[in-house]
Length: 277
Ligand code: DGL
Image 1 (cartoon, rainbow, N blue to C red):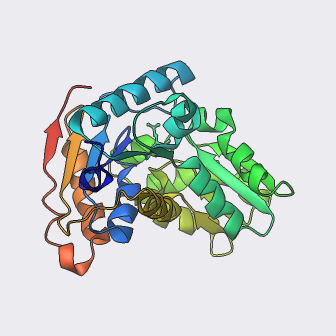
Image 2: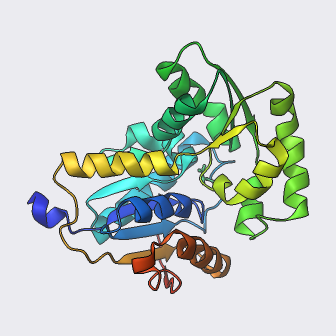
Image 3: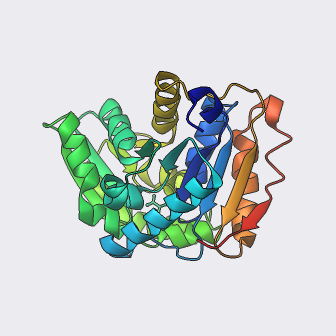
């Protein structure tokens, strides 16, 4: 299918290790209500954040292969870890966009000088955010911190829990003492902890993530490449690589909130397909 008009009606493929990428899906649904989404949560291999670059590259490749086999017009890597470690290696016959550049752009737009970045161990080790932010604005100061316990807390559904708050205090205190003015949520799971993070950082620190900037970028790219959906009939499909009980509950809550009024009936019935990747 090489005609851009036919291609346009294929879904956008989106993947993450688990539920985190749904924070990006939610922004995509809001910004591009006509676009269909094929989502893959690689729950069998989660977390990615403590794996080696080689392993994350292998998982990423398999995920994109899976999405290509199903038929997509573009892929959004809704995982910072995969974007940081594997994006440059991907060569496919459709565009692939990662979340680091949009997240860095959001940080640069928000900060007054000192940016904190929180993310998985692998993302922090790669320094992908530090490099992307300083490429845009070399005089900024960037401090970073890995928060490995956040992903399991979110996957467990403990996003708004006293335990999550205590852990967040422990992780964020050094960044707050260093007087950051902006905090980048450099893992797509972290926006699900926003309430707790807001309580810990207070009102003075801006919280930014990639989701809205990513959705804006996708909208621009689809328009430029004549790949926007022609029909007003978005269909979303969700796949996981391991049992998805928590996934389905979190997806229902998150996507119900993100759907606009005209589509609010579609989101709560998140049907999961179990797939092998
Ligand atoms: N949500 C992913 C990210 O943005 C990965 C979390 C994980 O699997 O460790 O980095």
